[in-house]
Amino acid sequence: MLHVIEHSVIDSIKLVPFLFLTYLAMEYLEHRTGNGIQKWLKNADKAAPVIGGLLGAVPQCGFSAAASNLYAGRVITLGTLIAIYLSTSDEMLPVLISERAPFHEIMGILLGKALIGMTAGLLIDLIRRRKGTEPGGSIHDICEQEHCHCEKGIFLSAVTHTVQIAFFILLVTVALNLVLHFAGEDILEKLLRDKTVLGPVLAGAVGLIPNCAGSVVITQLYLEGALSLGAAMAGLLTGSGVGVLVLFRVNHNRKENLKILGLLYGIGVAAGILTGFFSA
View 1 (cartoon, rainbow, N blue to C red):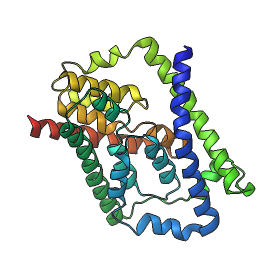
View 2: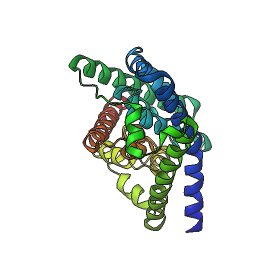
View 3: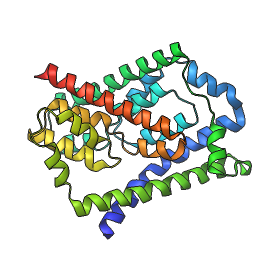
C-alpha cells in the first residue's frame, strides 16, 4: 500500500513543473496580452499539429497534460491536441530501451506515432476550419470555473491552478494504482494475449487508461511477440498519459470531452488496423 502511494506521489510530482509553467504562460497571455494573441496562437500557424506531434514524441507525458490545459483555454486547436495525444509515448520508450529493442524498431514506432498524430491533427483542423466549428472560449473561462482568485496576480493564480490539478491527478492516480496493484496487471495481459482479430480494439481500450501500466504492458507484450505491431500501435496511440484525465478536469464540457476521447480511440484503432495490414 505504501509503495503504491509513494509511486503515485512521485508520478504526480513529475507533472508539477509542466503544469505550473503552462498555467503561468496562460495567465500571462490572459492578463498581459488579452484575447488578441490567443486568437493569433490558435489561427496563425496552421502547422501547429506538426509541432504538437513532435513535442508529444518526447518521452514525457507532461506535454499531454499541458496540451489539455491549453486546449481548455482555447490557446491551441483540437487538431494540435489530438496530435500531441497520439504521439505521446508515456512509458513506451524507457521500456523499449531497457529491453534493448533494435534502434530502427524504436525509431520506427516513435516516428510512426508522430506522423500519425501530425496527419490526424492537420486533417482535423482543416475540416473544422472549413466547417467553422472551432469552439469558442478563453483562458479566462478556466479561471472563472476554478474560482482561482486571479486578481491576486499571475504567479499566485498559476500556483492555485497547479495545486488544484496536481491534487486531482494524485487522487485518481492513487486509485488506479491501487486497483492495478490488487487486481494485478496480469489481467491486462490476459485481455490482450492471443486476440488476433480484436487486438487493436482491445489494445486501444487499454491504452486509454490514464496510467503508465497500459503502455508498459502493451510494449512488453509486443516485445515478447504476444502482441502484433498493429495492436501495439493502437494501444500506444491512444495512450496519452494523464492528458485525458486533465482534460476532463479542466474542460467542463463533458460532451465535448467524450467526443475527443472517442476521436482519439477511433483514430488509434484505425491506425493500428492499417499498420497491421501493411506490416503483415
